[in-house]
Amino acid sequence: MQQNSNVANWSIMILLAFIWGSSFILMKKGLHIFSYTQVADLRMSLAWLSLLPLVWSQLKKTPAHFWIPLAVVGLFGNGIPAFLFTKAQTQLDSSLTGILNALVPLFTLLIAVFVFKIKVKWYNILGILIGLTGAIWLVAGDGVVMENAHYAWFVVVATICYAISLNTIKNYLGELNPIHITGLAFFFVGPPTLIHLFSTDFLEIMNTQEKAWSALGYIFILAVIGTSMAVAIFNKLVARTTAIFASSVTYLIPIFAIMWGVIDGEQIALQHILGTAIIFAGIYLVNKQ
Image (cartoon, rainbow, N blue to C red; front, side, top):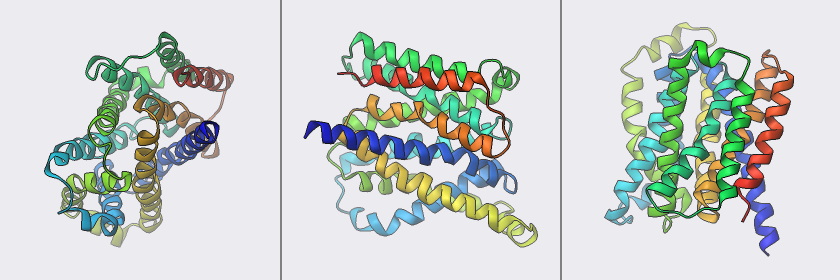
């Protein structure tokens, strides 16, 4: 039974890594037509609308003490990072943005240890550091992060936001259904981003830009599959395992982000292969019991 559970957990992790590793190229496609704020607005508002039918009945049923943690998850797990990542991708390649996303487990562990007093083994910490080393190795030599350090920091802050959300779900929202956590949290970001979207030149772009509808299609996939569906699956993984295990999905994300980057014309080098091998070694130690 335990073995079947582990296989299921790893299968979920790989599926999420593929979905989220594909998200960066979808953002890149959307940014060809829309501004970074419009891409983030569309991603959040479409994700909220897609989940609305599933959670509308839960608005009055959800106990009041859950709403503050849900607001934290909505803002830090979805809203703020959506804008930070699209801003970063105005200057960084999609593959490199995905690589920097691998910082999430490090911050998740730090918050879990220092805020929630979670006890971990020395080899779990070693795994975090090895995985992070692999992510850094993937970037080393390109010089992109150094040249655009300001934009790299947007991704770093976003990973801290994700870590806050992860620990909040694990410690305060364990009693709620993962779908309900996802949908209710989006109530804090969906309506305001939808309002903001229509205060921009979004409608003018849709009426005048030749490739606007195809760009909107990419963002629709990003919102529905890469956001609402993936976040619900992720919250389920957090409930089944630990925040640290779930956050280690970000170590696999660079592999798929690089794959899509290569398909889109970005170059792959030996450092990418070596970095990927180091990342897998880190994941093993992070999740070793």
